[in-house]
Image (cartoon, rainbow, N blue to C red; front, side, top):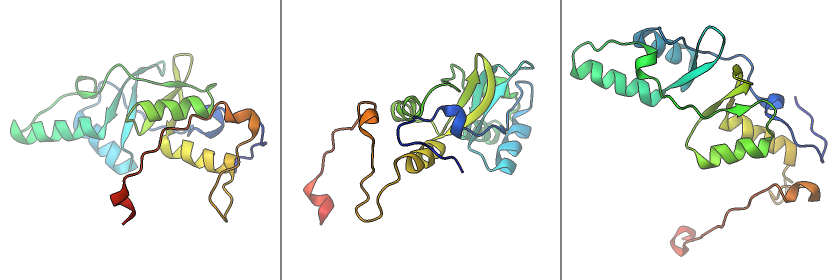
Length: 168
């Protein structure tokens, strides 16, 4: 279990998953869908032989492929033809706040973690949540997290809107 000092900010390399199921661009889509299902994962980076990220194959990409396969009676293709390109990634040296900000701005479940251009891990929204809980150690009595003063300037608090009908 990771331990954080109250004044330290963990880097992505501290809480990313290093064992990554990755796909190759030339794999068939049928094989890729099976890999995602068998691995119980919602998507995977697509890498070349040097571990450079070329794209991401998401559940959404796979569902679209499967719908087209049914409609066109036997669609085929490779991962490269169906993957999402223009991947947003994060450096292994980035901190938890940079990661949280990317997840806040984009509707991703995972981000490839890079060292330069090479894939070195994967980061999920859940990894960030788990790390935040370990870092801030919410008090059991009131649920309010303790955030050290030197970190408060890094924490962005969104405007909260409540609607009366939500409080029944």
